[in-house]
View (cartoon, rainbow, N blue to C red):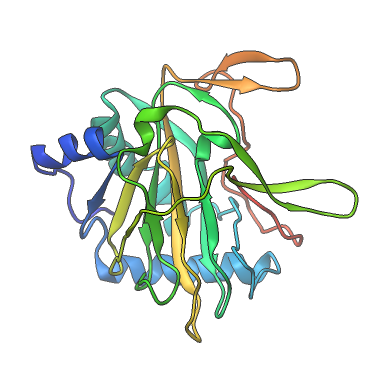
Length: 249
């Protein structure tokens, strides 16, 4: 599926130094168009057409998303960047509806805590620009561990959802991508997204991986567990979509 499999040594160094790198043309524009439609089908099926950020990790058996998530090609790419054999952690749609607001800065590790190498391969299935809410990253932020965070939203019952940095972020890079481009970033890299000021949704897809020696913190019993042996999420493809909206991490 992937249009290219090897990248210059400078990108591996950039990933190590900056906590992210841009993989131009990771997927062909033709394949990106097919995947874009599948993502829109997921969003429609899960009742999230105009969501602030439509996230679902459901995808159909035998679909192009199934091939992307579980095929050897993307896993090989991220394994090379993380320096060891890796496995799928959590794939999910990343669709920002028309005229939806920014998604505040955070780290993926402010949700489920990982000990070890993990990354997010965030792929554009349509143009991702500053105007329509593209991803924003803070270079080098992965070197400082897990930052203090707070809940973005707290409902009337006190339930928290989404996390954001406790301190305001004032300096970042807007990552503009064409269909088929991707940004690969470390789980500790601080990132967010700008508002979508256009009349069309921003269509992207996040495929998170972990290196096979990475552990996760199970807060229920306060123990570290090897992700390879004890998965955090049910990430297998499904025969049909659920009807209820769903949020990833």
